[in-house]
Amino acid sequence: MYRDLDKIEQEVDLLKKQGSGSEEFEEYLRHLELIIEMCKDIRQACHYDVRKVFQASAEALETQMEFIRKNEIRINNQNEKAIKQLGQITQKKKVLVNDLRTLIT
Image (cartoon, rainbow, N blue to C red):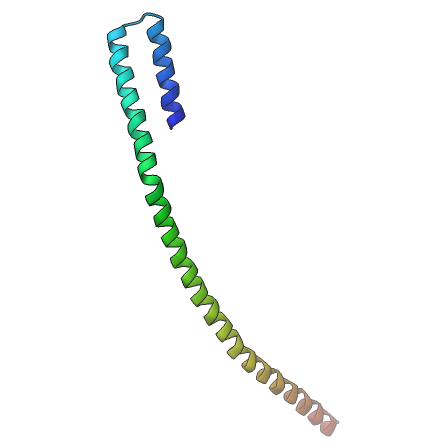
């Protein structure tokens, strides 16, 4: 955006040098200069505040992610025990099925 405004300002200067309606160009050029200055002021004023907001958001997200990771680890540990128990039950069922087959045949 700043480059576009600078480019417009240069075009106005060029047209002014070519001799077209100097009063209108002077006023137009002043408006452009004011717009450019206000944009620069806004960019400088907001930069730190915007960064500060994003930093606070990032810290909050990191805290939430840490909480989620802790819960995932806890849930995985709890599920690991249950999965091992299911595996043992499945193995017992397989042994019983094989025993039944040998008795039937």
